[in-house]
View 1 (cartoon, rainbow, N blue to C red):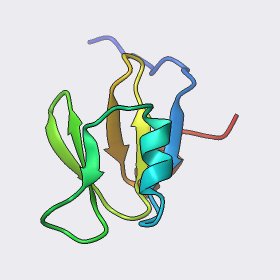
View 2: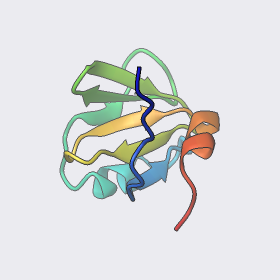
View 3: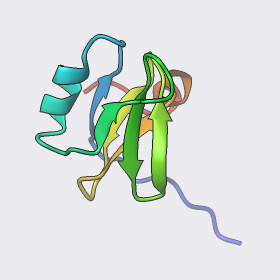
Length: 84
């Protein structure tokens, strides 16, 4: 079995604070699939390539290399990414 390392790529991301929906929607530039959850307070519903995912406060919304958006938990984000 071979070993592989994740390629170093630069991503765009924004953290969900519970108060910055407009800023996140501006970040997503018209991507209409990021909305406030109808079932849970202070959560975002994000339609991803794998289906609808929920972002909680402090999660990061990441723009992927194909222009898709998805949430990442804050602790995982900090392990994978660093500011550039």
